[in-house]
Length: 337
Image 1 (cartoon, rainbow, N blue to C red):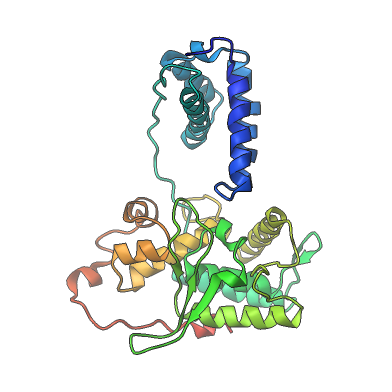
Image 2: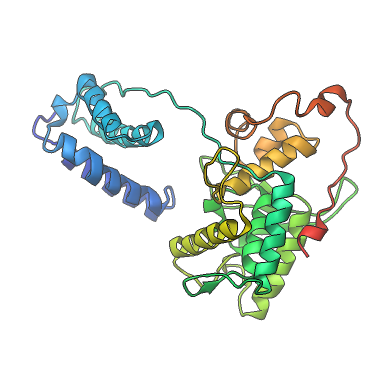
C-alpha cells in the first residue's frame, strides 16, 4: 500500500540512515554518506522540497534533470545526483511506499580518462621528487613537508595499479610477499578491502617488493610497521586527512615539476598514476587484457573505455606485427633507489 504523505526528504533521510548502517558493517565507505547528504542538501531538497513520493514520476524526474543541466553541471555530476534519487525511490519501493519505480532519465556519458604520464614525464617527475626530498627546494603543504614517503607512494601506486582511495586503507596485514620461483620473480599479493565491487587480490609488479620492503624498514624505525598499521602516513588516524595531505603534496610537486597539466590541458590527479600504471603495461608489457584487468581490480570494458582510449593500433604496431616472445621484466630499480 502506497503512502501519499511520505515526502522525498523523509525518504531520503531513511536512505542516508541505511547508508550509515552499511558503513558500520563495512559494506560502504563513509565518503558515500557524505556525498549523499551533499546531493540532498544542494540539489534534491531545493527542487523536491516537500513533494510527496507519489507525485514523483518520470516527467518530474526529467524536469529535475533539466534543472540540474541549466545550473551548468556536467553530465557525470547529474548522473551521480540521479543515482542518489534512484536509490531513494528504490528503497521506498522496496518498503512499499510507492507502487512502482518511475523510469530514471538516462544520460549519455562520455569517458573522461585522467591524463596519464608518458614514460619520460614519469622519469622527470620522480627525478624532481628526489631533488625536493633533498631540499632543492624544500616543499611542504602546511606542516607536512614533502619527503621520501611521497615518492614511495607514487612508485608503489604505479607498480601496484592501485586506486587512490585504496592506498589509504592499506595496512601491512593486507600485504603478502610471494617469493620468487621457477615461474618468475617475487611479487606482492595485496588483499585490500573490496573496492568498486571488486574483491580479488591485487597482484603487483616485481619492483613493488623492493618499495614495500623499504617502506616497512622505514616505518619500523619510527615505531610503526605492525600488521594493523597503515602503509602510508600511519601516524594519521584520520584517513580522509591523510588522503588530503598526499593529494595536496602531489599537486604541489606536480606544479613544481611543470607537470600539473596533461596534454589536453586538464589537471593531473592521483588517479593519473593508476592510468599511468595501466597504460604502461598496455604499451610495454606482454599481457592480455583479462589478466591485466584482474590484477588491477577492473574489467576489460573499463580498460578499453578509460585506460586504452588514448592508444591506437598504429602506436602499438610493433605488437600488432609480432608473435609471442618470452616475457622480459623491465628493470626500473634506478627509479626507486
